[in-house]
Length: 328
Ligand code: LTN
Image (cartoon, rainbow, N blue to C red):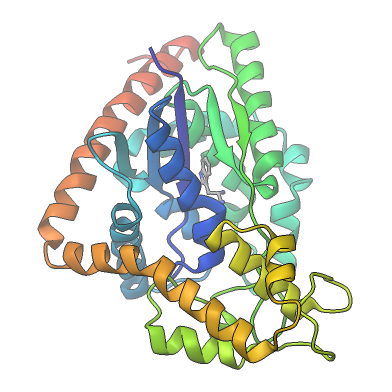
């Protein structure tokens, strides 16, 4: 049997290049490797911890479902599902809540950061976020969880909870290991001191951007004084960010790009980069257009995947309930 692997993305808005290179692209590669039994889901319940509106939420979930498929996730090879369609997830999260020390959650970096960024909306869901995440992981006995570095603390808590539950109630959960994925730190095109983010649309390359939008954003991207195209994040944050994007999409090393543009100007560099971005997005965008013509098909795919995930989670929940002495 192949080792099980599970990961998810929150539906919080249109995906941008940073989201793609940091997560979705890795998911597709892991699926293609054929080495794992993969579960990929849409973490819609987690996304409720940030301010949202119902209309937007539906669009965000549907849009991420299409993006998964357009990027190359394949329901024949991976189980694709929506978190909220597995009721056992939240029920099991309650049980794990009751063995999670308050102090552990209070130390979580993501909780502290998100509380600081949005002091008006420090909700309890944000606080217990890592416990639901532990269930997302533990329900299917995975060996691996592909995540970026920012999620390592949550994964460590997941392992702690699994161990704690097993010690107290008998072996029930596996302790999965992180599959640390490389997440390039893309910066905003209009202000390379800030992270690329959907909240700064002018500096953000979205996967859905038209060639005209890509061209205009790259053309107006902040460059730095001087005219050398060299990677130096302190002195030339703008150019370094463009080199990082170029290198990630073209699979050419940054040093070979520096050489190639040694005696060339910003204008030519930017024109080439825009072409690379447009060409890289094209297969995704073509797939997406095709998929949008059959929304019923997408719904069916996620319904079937969710049914499977929900049944696996429910089995695990029954096991958990028995172990802790609840009556069934
Ligand atoms: N917290 C993650 C999303 C997420 C996840 C998971 C990732 C929710 N549950 C389980 C891996 C496994 C994020 O925001 N990147």
